[in-house]
Length: 434
Length: 164
Image 1 (cartoon, rainbow over the protein chains, first blue to last red):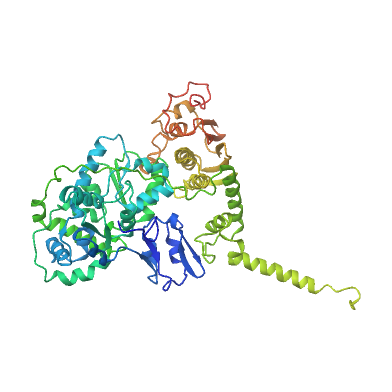
Image 2 (image 1 turned 180 degrees about the vertical axis):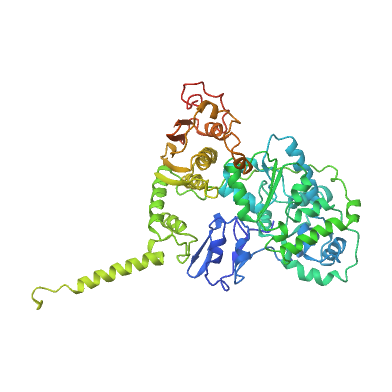
């Protein structure tokens, strides 16, 4: 473990130097987790799901994710890289997966274990779970932002999550439990496309502690790795088949799981649409839902460098064109069966106004009345994403009505009118008019 | 508190807005997620029915710490045979509605399955009023997806048979 991060809940953070206090991120946050205060955007910790949407849209580049620094490698004597398959989409196809993995060794790792290989095992475990677990729909738990979104906004769907560890976690468990059992000097480093995995390694979902020791952003590894690729001695290191590599893009996971009747959805707002429909009982005859917070899947993660759609095409090309990979596929390591959850993610009632229902009801009523009185333009000048969100903040005591520029103007106008009428009043003794 | 919504007829993009808002309010009150889901399913079905069959109507949600009462009222064609309509798979929705994933004949049975009390007041030409009650205060409140009883016998209130 790398010690506490900036927050228990998320790894997305803000560079106050760069933030101009504009309202772009406010408007795009799917959980209304951002407010602008004193000219800077602030993240409401408990509401952030690490989807990275604000990082993607910030015009000033002020929103960032804080993965672990490369220097963390020095703390372990034997370092194992677990690259996400999305890493393969960052480089064009003349660099083979073997070459990319060899480059990681040249960068200072002692061993590589592809997350794509663990993804194949996760697909098999998911297929086995679906066969034995009644009718669907079951929701994949591999995207950490989606799991958090469900904890906050769709708690009634928590029991529809497939209760299995993610490929990252499975890979790290195999490295520690099967390949190097009992060793304490082995550090496992996930090379990640997203902030969600940074948080998931520090505060895991579905387990008390993670087998991952550090999470490096693809963005931070990209340049040093790119510089080593041409000169690296290429070794036959790739073991994952196209089934595992495909997890980097949307549809890859459901194809790998291979059950008929799956939905795959990418991009956080479309994920919300599907979960709404599911909660309303509108989705029937569906066995499995692959839901990815990022556009085009993990290749669209905020810590990647390549355009998501270019990266997606490269992933597809690698799936088609690399027959060597499939010949090298290995079965699951003997003796490994640790796929499950030990601590299922719980509902997080961050939307609740008050623990006491009667009190919450009074506040909810006030919220409706307050919202009614606001202009409804959702301009964001008050620092809240919508007029309703401001009404909620007022009711919670975190804002006042005059934070709204229109309300403020009304008050100023009323005050001016009152001043004007006061000015016209004269004491009777001084009143010289007839 | 009381929330009132106008449900526009024929507009599938707006259908689900009222039930979505009610869902948000219930989440703010910290209502059990299982009950929120049941309220959402029951109200969404009733809302969709008004959109498909009745050219819209009004939806009213009355929320107290003890219960949620959802009343959906329209001036549409009414339901000629309520017992038949309560049967799973029975549908009068036209083909194009079914192609949109609606009209599978699960609407009323689903409403009954997901509410603690359901009453439907309807007559041809007079319109329909659906009243859905969910209890929030313990007793039966957390029972999810209760099994649907067989269609209520003719002449009885459809609310019967679902009371625990």
